[in-house]
Image (tube, rainbow, N blue to C red):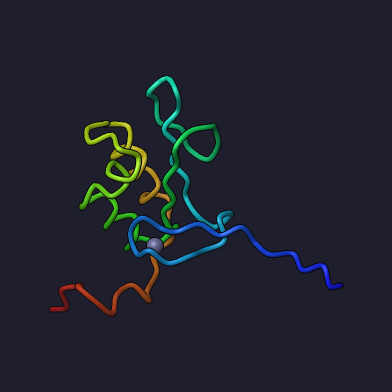
Length: 100
Ligand SMILES: [Zn+2]
């Protein structure tokens, strides 16, 4: 018997790809109706830590839909803060970037 250690994967709400959950941004809807980041119990949504996925999640309100809270200002603020921290990824420039 081989003991294989599989990473726990989660689906990104933007691109729907499966990724190691430690590499993703997790937003949690806490029981008090607050939005948690990273930890806490409750319904959660995962987004890749890439500019494209974070932007897409923001633009299309994917986290709000996934967590079933259509209007929660903390979600947009959290995604905006995460976008600030994410490294610019040149691989993301192959699409929808206006090149002059
Ligand atoms: Zn993604």
